Structure formats: structure tokens, C-alpha cells
Amino acid sequence: MLRTFINMKMTRPTVLFVCVLAFLRQVSSQRTPTISYISQEQIKDIGGTVELDCSVQYAQDYPVLWMKIDRTRMVDPLPISTGSSLIIRDSRFSLRYDTASSTYTLQVKDIQETDAGYYQCQVILALNNKISAEVELQVRRPPIISDNSTRSLVVSEGQSVRLECYAGGYPPPRVSWRRENNAILPTGGSIYRGNILKIPSVSKKDRGTYYCVAENGVGRGARRNIAVEVEFSPIITVPRPRLGQALQYDMDLECHVEAYPPPAIVWRKDGVQLSNNQHYSISHFATADEFTDTTIRVITIEKRQYGRYVCSAANKLGTAVAEVELFEISTPNVNYPGLITTNTGTQYSGISGFVIVLSGALLFSSRSVLLCSQYNI
Image (tube, rainbow, N blue to C red; front, side, top):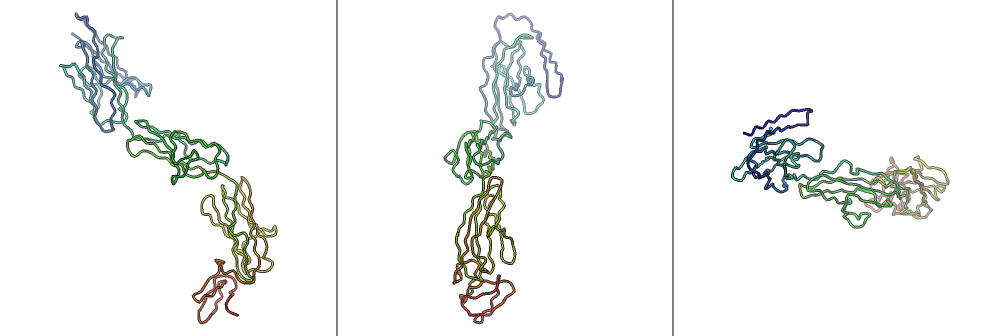
């Protein structure tokens, strides 16, 4: 009579060694046990159920085992069952044996990601001799973008850029690239498929947010936003290079600056740096990381304030300058945004604290000395 002894011991917490000692009697039949059927590859969802079948022939006098083989990690096989008895202590696993077909069916419920791997059916012929067949269980998993993918980049204009995106999951995810607002990619088109997006010579127009998208049909997919900052030297544009205004009126001179990193901005006249005082008011307004609008207001213009004004912007990559000319005109520039039109049609500019009555209307001035273009006051 066949006697099988299974000795299990733990030599370290995560490794289980199983020594199967089989004392096999001499069998009169000359037929060798065989595995006549093993289930094909199984692909299941997390939380599902799978049944793995192993049919044997001429093995009634030999031990039949189910083992789990993990080829992704160098660990010993995990014994699950021997004969019609479970070894593993996990309520999700069950085993049944059909005597008519000599089939051992291993069932796994509530499948977890860790259940993926190879399940091997073994028939032990002798201490160092066995026959085996295996079936792979693949568990569908939604994409997860790997930590070794690019997160963000800061590069200088002209450098080469390499954006990498990798994702795990099953089936293996497909990776594609897009830009914010479906802008055209440096490679051309709005979508690029592949793990690596290369930009041979990056320019400032390539800056912005890039999306790495991983999809495999399981769940909603995964996305990572990758910010690409491109450092470049300042560029200045002047919306109105020449502006005319009458004496004793205000006028705003503007420069639009584009640069990254944000530049230091200075206004000069006749080589002298200007600052905020009773004659000038300077303001900078950042509309985005790379854009700054700078304005100098010439207050209550005097003769000496006509001429060329220079705005300059500088960062670590370079410097840019631009000129705005302020010239004298006899009639006030009514298109100047600082002039306020009343309900009587009067244009004026003023400084806080002055009040004037025009045709019965009480007007509160807002800046400079109150001057009227339609009244002799």
C-alpha cells in the first residue's frame, strides 16, 4: 500500500520547502503515468473565479500535486495540494477529484493580483523523477504608470529632450502621448504612440504640459502630466512704439516681455534708470510664467519728459531691450486709457484730492492735476 509523507518546515518567513518522500511499491503494469490534459492559459479579472484541470492516466498509485510557480521572483514553488487534499490554508482555494476521468480540478475564487503565475500539475514517479504540465493564470490589471517614467523637465532652448513613460498592467498597456489642448506635438500630429517621445532640439514653443496615457482596456487607464519648462532669453515686443501726448497729461508706455526664467525688468531714459516717484509710476503684471507686461506711466508730462524710453529685460540666458518714444502733441490724446470720459463728454485726468464742477456735474479726479480739454478753467 502506498504511503506518502509530507514534511513541511519554514527555514525563513517567506519560503516554504516541501519534501515529498514517496515509497512506491512495484507495480505489475508496465504503463508509465502520463498527464493527458492540462487547462489552457487562463485570463481572469480581479475578483473572478478560475478552475484549472489536470487529467492523469495510470497514476492511481502515484502522488499527484498542484504547485504554484512564480518565475518573476526567485522563490521556491508553493505546494497547493497533494492527491485530493489541500495543503495551502486559504479559503479561496478548493480541490475536487473526478474518479471517472482521473481529473484534479483546482478552483480559485475571489482572484487577487498575487494569484497570477504558473500552476504546475506534477506526478511524482520517484524521489528525483516526476512528470509535470503547467498552465498560466493571467490576472487583468488596470494600467499603473511606473515610477521610472519622466515627471517634469527644465531644459534650455536648443537642448535635446527625452520623455519616457512606462506602465504595468495586464494586458500590457499601450502608451501614447498628447499635449495640453491637443496642441501639435514636436513629432507632428496630436498623438504619438510609444514609450519614448524625443525632441531633438527643443524650442520655447515646445514648452507646456505633455500627457502620457496608458490604456489596456481594463478600467479607465492611467495618465501622467509632465511639465516641460524651456528656458530662453527675453523677447520684447512693443505694442505702440511711438506715442504722442500733450503737456500736463499722463501717458502709459508699454512693453510685453516673454522670457523664462522670469527676467529682471528696468526702464531707463537717457541712460538713467527710472523708479517710482511723483513723475513716474512703474508696474509689472505677470500674465503667465513666461509673460510679463510692464508699463511706465509718465505723470503730468513736462517738456523734459519727452524722448525715448528704453525697457530692458534680463535673465541668465540673455538680455533684450526695446524703445518707446514719447513725443509732444498740441491736442491731448483722447485714446489714452487713463483719460476718463464723463456723462457730459468731458475728458480729464486728475490726481486724488481735486474736485471740479463742470456744468453742474461734480467730478472727482483720480490722478494728476485736473485738466479739462473742453473748458477754459
